Image (cartoon, rainbow, N blue to C red):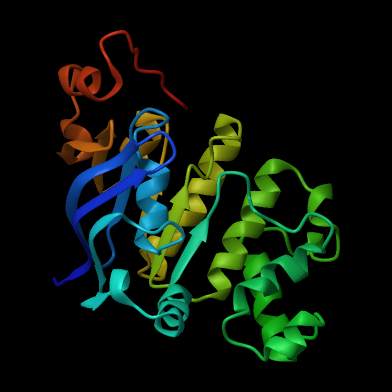
Length: 256
C-alpha cells in the first residue's frame, strides 16, 4: 500500500521566543490508517497537524500528500488540497450564532459558488447532503438550532458532520475530545472510527489519554519536546515507554 502522507524533516521555530516546536520530524501514513498522536501539552502535536495543511507555515522540511508537495503548493493549489483534508478542532470552531445546518454547510465552501455561500444560499442537493450527515452523527433534529445551544458533545458532532461535507481523504482531529466527559468522548471517537472504517478516510488524531489511543488507533506516534520518541503499535507501549513519553512522575489514567 502506497504512502498517503509523507512528512520529511519537518521543523517549526516560532520566532517569538525562539521556540523550537517541531524538531526534524519524519514519518509516513498509509491510506486508511488511524494514526494517533500522543504527548504532553506543548509537545508539538497541534503544530504538527497545522503544518500538514499549512494552517501554520513550517520553517523547514516537506509534506507530501499523494505525491504532491504541500509545502511548495501555490495558494490556488493549496485550496484544492485542503478540500481533501478536513480538520476537527478541540474547541469545535463553529460559528456560534449561526444554525447547526449553516455550520455543516460551511464544509462545502470550497465547492459551491462563493457569492451564494456568502449569502447562505446553498443548492438543494447540498442541504440534503448536510441533513444526511447530521443524521449520520445522530443529531438531525438539531439542524435549525443555534450552534451555541448545543452541548459540547453535540457541537463536536456538528464539527464531524461539517468535515463529512468535504468528503475528505484525510481527516485531522486536534484534541477532538479533550473538552468532553469520558462517555461523550467515546461517542465522538466512534464517529471518527466509522469514517475511517466505512469510508476509508485516513485519520490522524491527537489525544491526551493513552487508553483512547489504544482503543482507536492502529498506530501511535508519540511526541516530546517537538521530537518523535515512539512510533509503533498501541499495544507495545509498556510502562517504561509510557514514562519516556509522559515523564517519570506520570501515572496512567484510564478513560472507560
